[in-house]
Picture: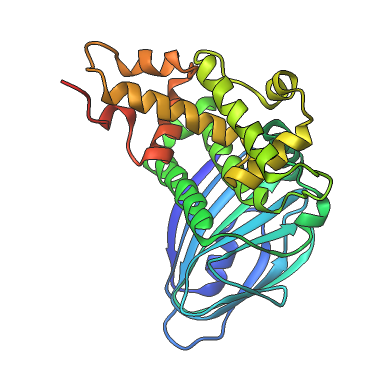
Amino acid sequence: MYANYETFEDADRHAHALTGWEQRYDQVGEGAFRSTVKQVSVAGVQVFQESANVRIVQRGQLPAGFVTFGLVLGGGAPFSFQGVRVDENALVVAPGDKEFLLHSPPDMSMLGVAIDAKLLAAAADTAGVDVQDEILARHVLNIPGAAGARAGKRIIAAVETALADRDAFSSGEGAHRFTHTVTESILDLLTFHVPTREDRLTYACRADVVRRAHDLVLARPEQPISVLDLCDKLRVSRRTIQNSFQSVTQMNPVSYLRAVRLAQVRRLLTTTSQHEVPVREAAMRWGFSNLGHFASDYKSLFGELPSQTPRAR
């Protein structure tokens, strides 16, 4: 496990700071080089947030065994990855052990994420997201700008948390929470590109699948529902569940159903006092047994910790 924040005045030193990467940065824009790198690595996941003030050309070899993603946070002009234009409505995607070429504009800011391919596949299977190899080989995927910004904000918050409290981050729970947040955020973006051609349900039918899933969550507050539970209770396939949520909510089913439960916790908090229902009890009532994960997910969704939510008097 590794968490670090560094500033640089040389492009090569910046490039060499990213652990596990074989690459070089060539400065091609005029001016004294200034850059920063925030980097967090755990088993199977690496995240780095980098910025630089001048135009640079990045080239090298992507980490073997990992799938690499990139989100544009800012820049004076579009990026270019493998000859494809990249802006704030795009997600860079690349399988590992391949050469890459990235042109970065002046005043660039970018979020890079490398996830172990097996870990990504397992997380996708758990979330009910059918991530096919063809999707990962496209280099650049178009995504809604708001969705990209939301995912970027969530991952950056996880990075800042790790850097602020490295002792807590080094614990098994802290590392697990970081991995969970990052992989889920990326899967939410990949959801926009899961194949739907095999699903012939009408939009109304998909909306009904989502409605019934929503109702199941409300009917079983203390028992979180998995994708397999949904398949069994609704008598539909995993593909139908996946496609229905993607079509209607633009979210994967696990993220959506957790958000529904979090919304119920928030409603409970705002309508009761701390004396009546402590935060821990409110979380437990809606199936959140791990308070660390609960607090992190709650803050990601509502922008505040549950302890900061105004309570009734």
